[in-house]
Length: 216
Picture (cartoon, rainbow, N blue to C red):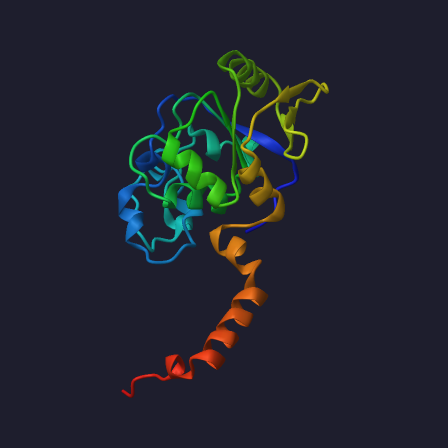
């Protein structure tokens, strides 16, 4: 998992409340057994005018010109600004996969659905909860100023606005540790790879019959 330390990025505004995971990545795309390739179908039903199915070439589709992510001023955004209860609905992990594979590294909202919130941390995305009034002000500024950027400093736990104003946020210490180090669940285990190998070697030496495998 990619480390998250300091991110300075363009902000895209998702000005809707209660955006659920089926809107983030519609159910038909969950058929894939891979963990990659979901970025082109992020917000698929809002992003395109035609119905989407797995395996389609995005270049052959009809983009919705009114959808925020299709507007030129928000191309390349890595910070998504959202309203309350973002990520509600089913618990599909494909939702943070799609967001990350599109290019978002940080999400800012007044609140997130619990399971989605947890899944973000496990997939290298930092979900930031800020007071509703601060989020509303950010929406106003993003709409008013093209190329609006924010700096997210995880170590200091602040969002820095273009004028230098700092908005502090809370993050649980263990989650912060994992993001700073780039550790997902597998990465956390692999920190102890040498100890695991040593234990396995000692176990086989003491009980060699455990190393036997059934033929066929």
